[in-house]
Amino acid sequence: MPVQWTVSHPTRLIVAVARGDLGLADIEEYLDDIVAKNTLAYRKIFDLTNATARLDDDALMALGARIRAYRALGEIGPLAIVATTQESYEQAHIFAALAEAERPIQIFRDLHEARRWLDDQSGEPARKA
Image 1 (cartoon, rainbow, N blue to C red):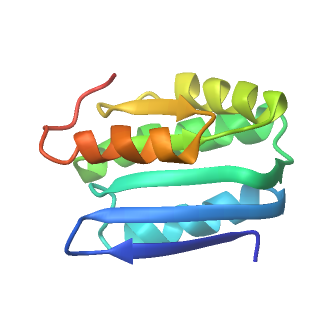
Image 2 (cartoon, helix red, strand yellow):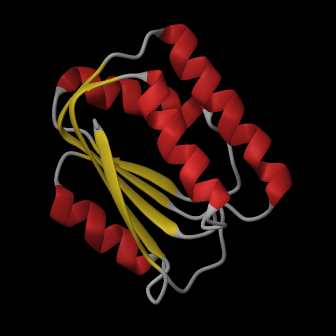
């Protein structure tokens, strides 16, 4: 499975780690699970460090549309994306632009920086960064 994730209910945190080739269906499975578990409002870190995103423009647009549709479900928690390659970093920026939601979202090249930023988001109401 290209994406593995854990949910911490006490800390309201989801940590997702992608490995290998990452496609649209993999991300959709992850999103379906967090919605089904009613954890959309949790803080999220999505680590692409060991993944190769296989997402074309249509896939990125589909993901953006899905996230925008989730706004009707309620609060969407902050998202930190860790993207270490230039390609994944650029795709993460495109995703962030297409997935307009009332929540903070930042893209990092370092996992520890992403986690520090995400931890700072724990007490604030959701807003776009």
